[in-house]
Image 1 (cartoon, one colour):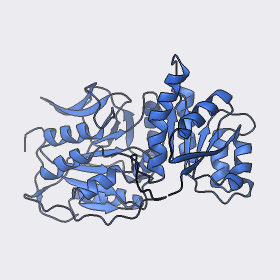
Image 2: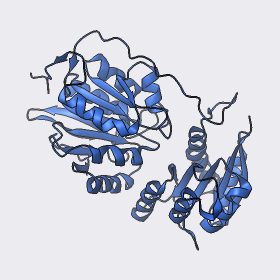
Image 3: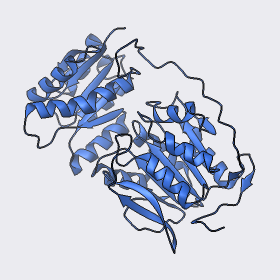
Length: 373
């Protein structure tokens, strides 16, 4: 199959060279051109016909956010309005805010620029580790050499594995997401009512600084209260606890009931925060009375945890392939037979409501929280 055609947009000569050199090392990627700002990028889209664009944020004339909006609106007469876009961001408050703006404008994902590294070689390695997997995930290409498809073929969801025991009415809602997650969550959480009868814990793969700003944005959008999780907070209905960057969020039981806990245990699935530790801890703290939701994201984080939820009598929902930016995480859960429902994004909130109210079908057993009925 043909290589992935990438256009690199950045006003820095050094960054353009680093990104171009790193991508050109991979035989399945072809850098077809560069642009020094968003205005030039819009003008070159139809000429270069890229499969994907990497986009800096701070640029003269037309910055990255404006360029994303322009591409999605068909600016410059371009027909490439759906081309995947990966932003280059800085690990700062301003960089995080701008990146979230770019994702809201239609960017698909982001990588962080190498910060305070001592050499060009280290910068190249940082870009190589972050960028190439995301390019291939967004284009449906495997990370290992072999036959490649331009886009992932639709996969028929596997029927859920048969249950060996009763289904428990959920006492907690846990959600995991990654690539495409910020926009998916910005649609799901605002569709949930302030009267949600259970606490919510959420892992979105994000670095520090980003998670704090993301929690604030979700809080503004939602009737629910959304906070960046801190250690030792009692879990009460109507509050969403978002895992902070570089910390696993888990549920700990205490004499006063379940509460949040943050750990720096080793990364799982190459991630911290990771979805699996949250899902496993929720199963233990709530005796299986858990509703798990796995949204769009690359990789397989959440698959093991989803299996634990289902084995303990909980319920698992997964986003479908058609509405996922990357059907890695929800696809892994679905293909393992752990998903009770595989749904388009716009039906996830309604399904959450049905399962929490106990009308989703199946025999419901009373929830046990913290080991007590």
